[in-house]
Length: 161
Image (cartoon, rainbow, N blue to C red):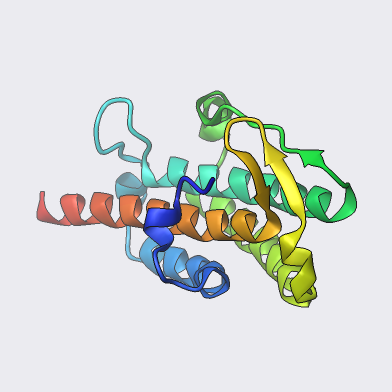
């Protein structure tokens, strides 16, 4: 159900969600515009594009969380990330990070305000089946860690090149 479970492992998903914006800001602060915009290989996203993807996904997660809470038996609408990525040339890395951070804080405020029983609310993903709101939150954390790992790998290769 959670394709990012291996990335999350035993980490507390809420702690991961809380830490990610600061980690991303710290990394971005150390990089030049050239480094941020350089794709690590043909067909692979640059750090800026990964940040744009994270901003997009945070908005998607915001919608999924709220619909799970508001609508019984909600079915999640999947999206094609590569189609969404076609618009990423319009955004700077900083704008993407700012958007991600603002929406993440908004999502965290809601997540942290919820009673424990809210996390057992069911939602269905057409490709992954029925899951709970807790699984959605865990997916968010694993997704963060996956992309942080990608960004750190790009940075390491850029520094050693």
